[in-house]
Image (cartoon, rainbow, N blue to C red):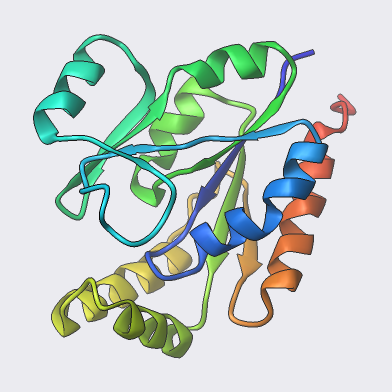
Length: 189
């Protein structure tokens, strides 16, 4: 039996990186690999544990078929290494920090994926983005508006599990671990 792709999405500032880090050890104990994305952002940037590459290197890797999934958002390019296919084939679950805009493509490639949307109340999101200091006030408001649109227009043909991360991180971790446990259970079809 193959593994399941756990496709974590959410607005910038929702706490995806904090959730992944807080859940890292229990996820690994559950035979779940956590993917390190490739991003065209400098290695000095604060945030997730990602491999930073130049735009030219990203294009070369993409042309070479080194990504299972790739997308562009907010002026950056993101890639999920093709190594996940081997992990899934070996029966391991795989958690990726994905993109809401790329969900449809991810479902086409991995039809049994478990989609997880990490949400956060707008006022909490605004505060986190302001503290982080990577975006302008205009960009922050655009992110909050996109978050509301996605929340309101989720596709009915893709089941999306929602985890609210407005409170204690331990609550979000427990919800994520519960979803991973359910995803690992054999289908009852």
